[in-house]
Amino acid sequence: MATYELQLQTADGASTLAMLGGPGTDTAGVLALSYTRAVGTVGALTVTLPPSLPLAFLPRDGRLLVSRSLPGVPPALDMDAVWFIVGVTRQLAETGAQATIVHAVDAVDLLRRRIVAYAAGSSEAVKSGAADDVMKAIVRENLSSSATTASRVLPAALFRVAGNLGAGPSVAKAFSRRRVLDVLREIADTATQAGTYLAFDVVWTGATLEFRTYTQWRGVDHRFPSGFNPVILSPDTGSLTRVSYRVDYADEVTYAYAGGQGEGDARAVGTATDTARATLSPFARIEAWVDARNTDNSTALADEADAAVRAGRPRVVFEGAVNADAPGATYGRDYRFGDVVTAQAFGVSVDCRIDAVSVDVTGDAERVNILARSVA
Image 1 (cartoon, one colour):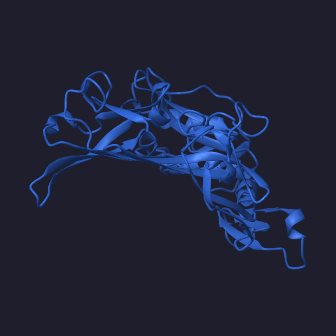
Image 2 (image 1 turned 120 degrees about the vertical axis):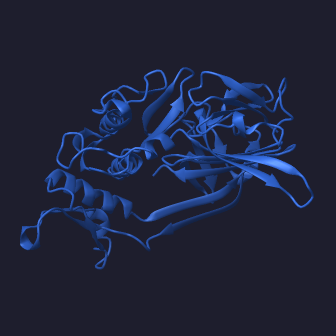
Image 3 (image 1 turned 90 degrees about the horizontal axis):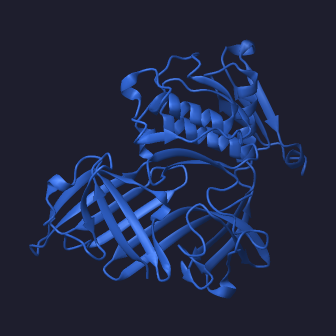
């Protein structure tokens, strides 16, 4: 089993308020810990503490840092995550036992807290270019150095945006007054549907929080046989159980229309199709409509339609329960959150991204649940 240590800091990370769990702590330790991170979403953490910890030590947006270590593996910040306190519950059971339950979210929540606070048609609310660079521009203009309102600029010592890479496909999008996180998700989906996997995160660099984008995969390529130190999840090695594999055509889309601004015959419409899939049978033209009335840009409409077609591909679903402690395929030693591994069963080999990890620790019992999604 892994060992854990939690560090509680002030909101700005400048001061450590307490060390929770592990050697040398100044409290009675952690009673229970549960946290989940998934690519492109706000993660959630709950930690149950003895009632002896004063509420003053649990401020709004106080930081929690979770370090995890395995035998022979030095402690490291799990999943590069900083967690911000968003709630505290004092609990009294019928037995008279008391506890303090702390609720926290990861730093991706900073993107949820801001909207694109610019007028429709402005340069800050309509963008085109490499998808990853567009994402970074949006974050800079709503949380960081390029925000036009000084009170919206997070201090550079606390938050920054990584440099542009130009690694994503070209996109065009209009998104005035919408939540930043929602816009970023849609751009990531559009890029991925266009054939380039694109993800984003807010991670701790050791000095500050940083918004980053990732193409192909978020972490390290451990695919078999070409990746670095290849990792195979398989029933044969005990690293994978309860396996199923299916191909699902139920929600397929092979032709899409995206309707933009205008009315009637004057409405701007973009289209896209997957000719190979649309001609597999006499009945294989399966249509969908996308409401994209916030733009009349032909490139943006074509992108919206293309995203719908790619999202409507047949689903290849490879599912299984991952044994996080399997020799040669141990989570935290052989692979981590965001890495790519290979899963094998039924004579099928599927490359999968580790897109979500959930950890539950109570006493000396640990359960790690891992979601691996097909790269295709």
